[in-house]
Image 1: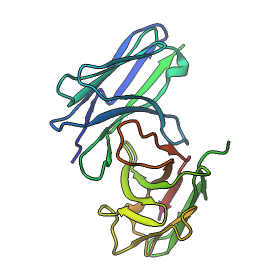
Image 2: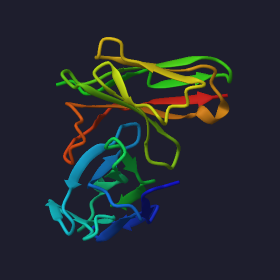
Image 3: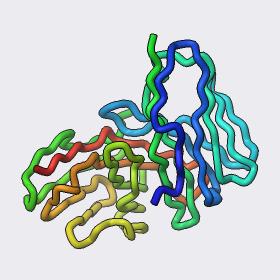
Length: 111
Length: 117
């Protein structure tokens, strides 16, 4: 059972386009993290959001935590081929602070 | 500074054979995690260590999986005997000290890709 549902599962776009990836759950998380994973590598942390309604920006990436701390979104402006990768959201649950990962969104940006 | 080191990177075995994976965390990191990542899925926690103590191992299938972190530094994950369904990527991660804080960052190794034939 996936605690965190990510959509879309796959996204293929042209360089310069904007996109949004969603991470939804029926559970409340104390914090939510976004990771990016490239082929043959482990995930790398991009951002942590903690407060309901929080918005964080990392260059062309904008992350938002839902008011109820159950969902999050990642928006990329003017995507570049270097943004290609698997984007994973992960929520920190109440069970020993365990991190629960979503299935991921595979993003491909074509030049 | 060196990242999390895992070996081997790839392993192919026949079912019912044993297999072991090794992880060396970032120097000074007290917390070590083993995750399982199936194709098309996100990582799932198998076990978490705080120094030598396994503080979260409820998701480790103990009938065939075992792990150890004897000196609180590097760790070994073993499967015996392996089954076809064990084919996956096994990721190791570490963090300075996971107190359950919101901003705890886990640093992942590149993983070991296991194929069971």
